[in-house]
Length: 93
Image: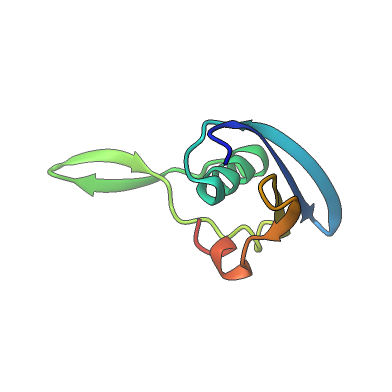
């Protein structure tokens, strides 16, 4: 089993197939992939929020599908196959 390294991913961005890879820290694969896609393709829209009497910036939930990202797969080295991230997980990142 991998502890960290490079994750290979493929997905469609605005209906164009994309293959990519990025450095993975060994944590949650799915979460790392979704965070990478948000960071790469979506400008972080900060919203003003109240917290404990003060203001702070927080990020709203992001729907990757509405931003043109769909059909996300990652390469699993243990099984040597591409595994799909369920579409329902792309809606609330």
